[in-house]
Amino acid sequence: MDKVKIASSVLAADFGCLYEEIRKVEKEADLLHFDIMDGHFVPNITFGPEVVASLREKTSLPVEVHLMVDNPQQWIEPFAQAGSDTVIFHLETSFHAYRLITSIKEKGIKVGVALNPSTSLENLKYILSQLDMVLLMTVNPGFGGQTFLSECLPKIRDLRQICRERELFFDIEVDGGINQQTALEAVEAGANILVVGTAIFGMVNPQKAVRKLKEIILKRKE
Ligand code: DX5
Ligand code: ZN
Image 1: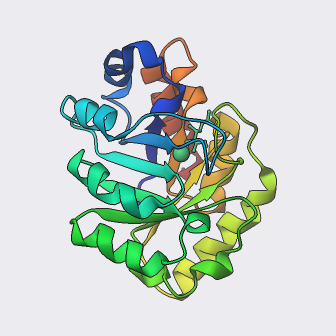
Image 2: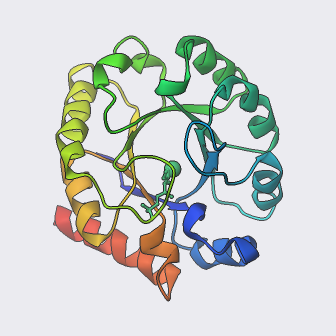
Image 3: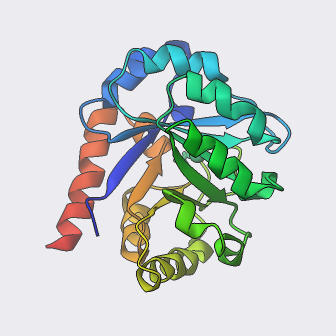
C-alpha cells in the first residue's frame, strides 16, 4: 500500500481563526478536509464555497470537500470554482450517482463517494471503477468528536479486498473518531487516508499531533 495520508478536518478547528489553525498543520498534514453540512442531510450546518475559496487561496495543501448535503449536484460547480481538488458526495443523497461522478470528473476534479456506517458496499459495485476514492464513515455523519464505530472495521477490510480482487486503485479513506489507537486499526484494516479532526485540532500542538499519528503508522510497518 502507498504511504498513508492524513487529512486534517477543519471542522474541529477554531472557526474564529481558521487560517491560523490551518497554518498550524500545513507542514505535516497531507490534505485539508472540509465538511460541508446543510442542516438537512445531517443535523448541523457548517460552511459554504466562499469559505473554502478564501482559505484555498492561502494554502498549498490539496483540499477535499466532503458534501453532507441533500442534492449534491447543485454544489459541484460552486465547489469546483472554490478550488477543490477532490469532491466527495454521499451515495445516500444521490439518485443519479453515475451522472454526478461524470459531472465532477468533467471539472477535472477527483471524485469520491462516501458511505454512512450502515450503507452496504454492494451499492458501490457498478460505479467503483469510476472512483478515485471511497470514504467510509466510521461515525454517523454530522459532528466531530464522536467515538469510532469498530463495527466498521470489517467493512474497511472487505473494501480493501474488493480493491485487490478487481485490481482497482482507488483510495480508501476513513472518517470519524480517528485517534492514535483507531488510526492503527483502520490502517491495518486497509485504509490509506485518515480524516482526523479532534485528535489534531483538539490538541495543544496540532502539528505535533499529525507527526505523532504518522510515526505510529510508520512504526507499524517496520
Ligand atoms: C463528521 C465529519 C468528520 C469529522 C471528524 O461528520 O465527516 O470529518 O470532522 O471529526 P473527528 O476526527 O473529531 O471524529
Ligand atoms: Zn468528513
